[in-house]
Length: 408
Image 1 (cartoon, rainbow, N blue to C red):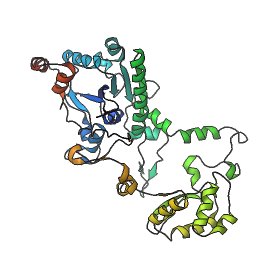
Image 2 (cartoon, rainbow, N blue to C red; image 1 turned 180 degrees about the horizontal axis):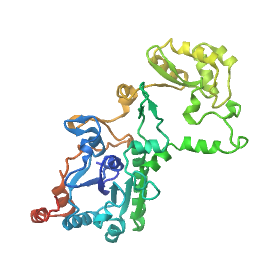
Image 3 (cartoon, rainbow, N blue to C red; image 1 turned 135 degrees about the vertical axis):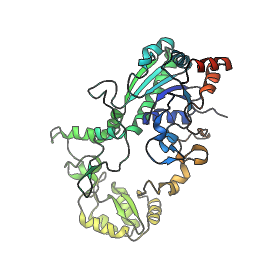
Image 4 (tube, rainbow, N blue to C red; image 1 turned 90 degrees about the vertical axis):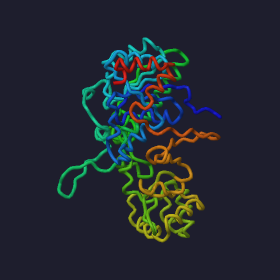
């Protein structure tokens, strides 16, 4: 059997709530992630919804595949255990307010002194610097801060948080995991560790780079920064806001749902017109070679609206494959799991083993199968197992540490 990609990588994680996501994928890929919790445990188990048999879906998902060890870091006995674990680790994750571990004498400088190769990553809302560094926050704050969420109003005039994809808490693990593993590669080659500062707000802004960079570009003179050639160089609204007036790149209603039509290249548009036996549409509106959405052409949009209503979504998807025309399904988070492409590729971790039905790691390793992660642990579930397996402790040492209050 081929070992999982991150077998042999050990992570000591001190986290609460959503920032624990930085190590979820690492655990999926085979890293030994030891989640060190306070005696009270991470209250993520009680946060958000749904709650499944008394435990939150967020905990089941974010902490799957990890081991939980409870240490009362207010005692020197527990701090010494933490240091011993770090001596045998590659990565330390401080996923709370910056400096939380330093208050116990377990900051980067302290830990690097005993393990120079350690990669220490501080994960927080706004990072370790800047005027917001001490500001308490939750996940949606990074979406509002980065301009991703547009405030909405209900029928009574009250402002509310609209439904949206959470970016900050999902982007930070991607950037953070990439940086952490890059630092581990360097540490193994050079012996030099690293201290990383990861702000979830920064990650949200970086993930939405196209809109922010477009606005910065549009701030320059119009004779320097223009729109697309197919639009006569006229500036469109930024990013997907500029799709509203699109016609050959637009969502259309089918006979039983919706599909996304994406014939922005002239060749695809020609294939479509020939495939539906309407060559006159191409002759009248051939468009430009690339990136032409027939913007604002209401006459053509009305024709396409009526055309797309004549077939089911399935028929249009089959048409797109046979005629080489980009046409995509328009799903919802509720029905996505029923999509045949989803069913063919996604690995569902079943609730019988994992506490909740979850989407597995999305990257395939051809010719091998990643091991299924264990269910997210209860607080302290693996404390003594970790001490025995990682540190080689026996019953006497475990008993002594317990009497010293190391476990709370």
